[in-house]
Image (cartoon, rainbow, N blue to C red; front, side, top):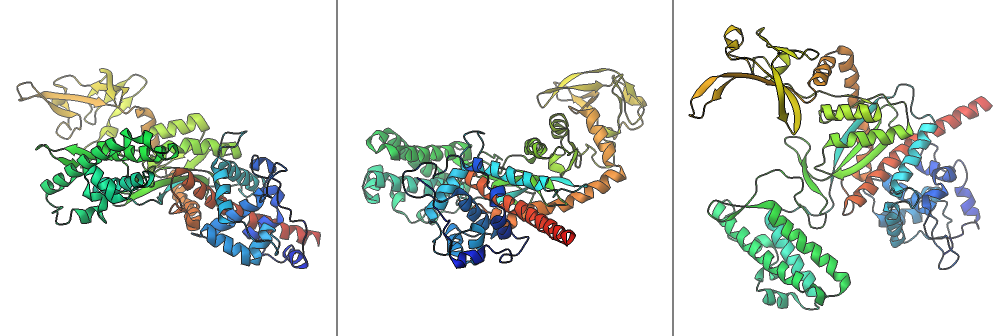
Length: 554
């Protein structure tokens, strides 16, 4: 399959190639003027056009340029991008597409996006990630990052594309969808399947409409609905799974996946009640299924009052230049702190001179700080973990601890060197113990956080038991809290607000909501939006350098 040949240019095509046709510093100007630099041949290894047989294939650099132009306009669809490529002279100049040629079809663009999501044969990483890093490296080599960068890490929600449903609708709508699929593969109508399963819900227009008249505020009524749905789902999935051999092989995978998802909702979302009924479990779980069409999406909280559904974009970059060095997309329930070290490792492969990062409280745990320093050699500047102070009394941080001699002194002046190992979150940590009766000489015994009466087997309160369990990294935690109080650290941290522009540049190009189902599509969309942001920074920098070069030449 050879590549299309665009070497024969008309007079109108030559006008598109003039230097003054596109505005310097724009994305179209950069794509038109530096295609060889932006689109190296190794990046598109395996794309169509490497053989001599078959129909002519569209060149991968042209399709990549079209993808970037599409994401430069927030929310633009593939069809909209293709229509604009057919009429907009600036876009044609950026694509180097002659006037006599029609833009590619939407199917071609879909195939190319699927190609970008696949791992590169030589590097085992998705091509879109490799392309993003290549363009980021071009910006770094061009000198976009100045002498005083402000490195910032942050995350932002990305709403999923699929419909998010509650437990009742997940079961009811999922059952009706399974019935429709089963009818199609069996070449029957829904009425036949409904009679076969004995399930009139399959013929209803909606799940809530089928249970019209239910008092949803009544726990017993809700329990009856859930019990009915669970019984129906178990019978339907059992029937489908037992008869999968009777349908075409290419239809079995989708049917089995829908059955597994229905059973997953029952196992994860429901729990038995005391009277033998069912209710929706009131527990937090990031593994809950929230959408059949987007099963990788998850519920998560951005704050105490804001609940999001979908994915989360994690990014690291320079707040001064606006260049994003590394980016990743995860399901929403993944904690921010777990992604910091992978971001730092990828960023340091591109730019070695990174010694600190400004981040919010989600990155302030000691495990994140220690891993970032040990793995990447980067210091995390973030609010430390909150202390244990309650009210106006002393907290654990008010106890003086000599870690060399392992001696602890309470705020009242009582000293102990008696300690032992104890368990905290699966880790062994030291725990200081004060002798019985030592509280009599303590001036703060009534407010002391470790002054707790023991409960005897008889239920009566016993003598006070004074113990102090330390943090897994108590010494490092105290050092971080002491450093956080320094004015120069607080002044540096105030610059973290400048990093909000990094996420803003990504979300304003359509990455606030996924445009397709699945984590792979969300990752492609976020990387494309971030790449447009970086390329615009590079375009402005290159245009400025060219102007300065011309002035010096004159």
